[in-house]
Length: 265
Image 1 (cartoon, rainbow, N blue to C red):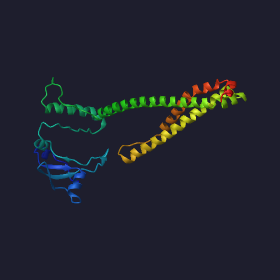
Image 2: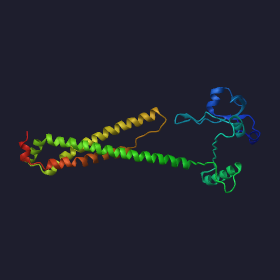
Image 3: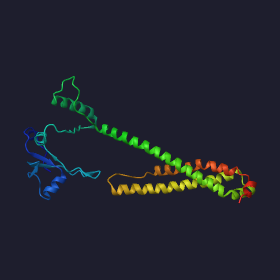
C-alpha cells in the first residue's frame, strides 16, 4: 500500500518511512497506516507505504522492518555504524555489470584513489552459496566417516554373532554335512542368516530415520524428507555389510569336519 520514498525525500532527509507488514499490523491493526505517524528512537516518522507480506523464513519474520533514508539513519545511529547495502540487478545476466557499477560507486563515495585498495566487502548470492556448500561438504565428509565407522562396528558385531551361532550349531551343521549337504550349502545358509540379520537392522534404522525426518519437518521450519533412492541405498549397504562380514563365519562353518562336529555336545 502507498508508495516508496522519493529521491527528493531521501536527499532532504525527510522523516518518512516504508514499514513491513508486521509493523503495520502490530501498530495500526485494521486502520489504514498511510500518513499515520510512528516514533523510532525518539524521532517521529510519517508512514508513506507498507511493503507486501513476505512471510517467515526459518522461523524468523521477514515483515518486521522499517525503511528510512540513509541520512536519517546516520543522524540516529552515527556515521561510524556498519552498513549493508543490497543491490539487485534487473536480470541475473547483469550481475557482473552491477557489481562493477557498485564497486565504482562505493570507491567514489569513499574518495579512494586508483591505487588504494577497497575498504569495503562485496558478497553475491554465489558467494553465500559457496560458503554454504563448503560447510555442507565438510559436514558430509564427517558424516561419511561416522557412517563408515558405524558400518564397520556393526559388521564386526554381526560377525561375532554368526561365529557364536556356528559354535552353538556345530552338531546341526555336522549332521547336515553327514546327510549330504555340500560346503556351498552351509556357506549359503550362514550367509543368508547374516544378510537377513543386517538387512533387518537396516530396515529398523531406516524407519527411525524416516520418523526423525518427519518430526523435524513438522516441529521446525527446516525442510526434511526421505528419498526413495536413499532408502534403497541404505538397505542395500546393510545387506552388503552382512554379506561381507558373514563370509568368514560361513567359510568356517563349511570347513567343519562332520565326524568331529557330531562328537561335540
